[in-house]
Image (cartoon, rainbow, N blue to C red; front, side, top):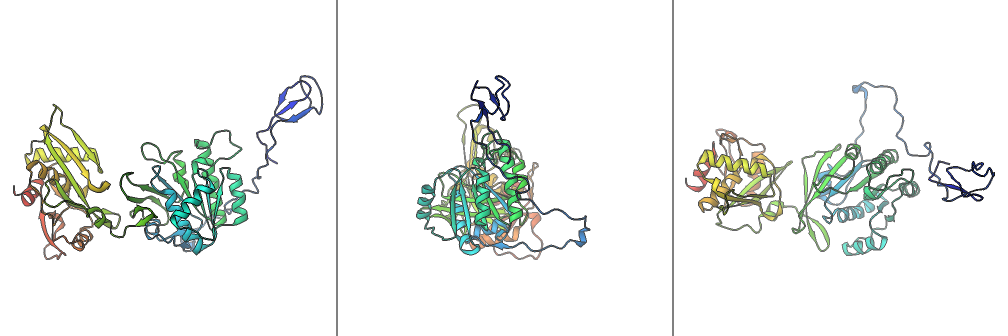
Length: 454
């Protein structure tokens, strides 16, 4: 019996005490009654523990067994996880409210229940009726999928011990609490302790566990940073509320690469995989419009073609405006300064607006040349040919620097029907063949002359 948050009061004088005994006020014995029923909590010996470590071993003597992976039935999710769900792993998924975290995990739970055995979906935010309505809308009716509406971690652990699921989903970690702690659910201490207990349970019982995490206004997962250190994998589910696409990124993965992304589209029947995200982002691009440039961004090992749009117009006030959506604001300001200093564009009197069409996000330096060319195209009111892809990083002296992964970028562009590309000169070697016509440039000025005619 562990100590609970109980209080006792003397029936004679009303004196309150943390434990029964002789009343110090009226000296009566046996007059205390419990105001709150004492709660029983499992002793330390009953709680899940990791197996004790043995003697120190030489690194060369340690034998490694391949982790057992189970496919989720969602190819994009499996790719981001590194090939599937690993037994005993702890995965944390964060994202903005309404982006589709619960929908993704509910769809994955169906396939896992059919392939791996029982799956326990625990929700501290929705009732059984709400989950059932969503499951009916998504067409989910797996016999091995169990639901529990609970926030007390000790109750959850007791159900896990009885059901023995292969996969556990906790939605969300900020709603779960331990009764022994005085702090409310979602506090730093509760999130840290609950995360640690779930980690021990996952490793000791071999239960693959998914945790849903709330995010702050800045987009980081709420709660202590130690939560991200505890888990094996940290995924971020991103997407604009007014756009149908969603991107799943891994920022930490002990069982796979952190360079992969998964692309989904939110439809009436739930999340659907986007096998060709480049075609998805380019489906509505205008033809012959000044300020529109196609760039190739490398997300992990996957090339992604997106449309960059820029609008440059005379400033109405003394200080020109700089508005950026979908890429780094400071990087755009730097590139506009380079375009003015090295290529002679008087942008200090111009408002500049840069957008990644379709609600996408790009951050790698290989799109620098595309941003500069889009701004120059809008200023000169000259369109860039629609069959050309622009790739390159720009330095402060105006040089176009080499980028990584050029062959896969060009291969993806050729597969989508593009016929030519402007790339860094240093990426080209004599005698090398490419799937499309390639022109190398060494500076921003050379790129402007090649694409916009001087």
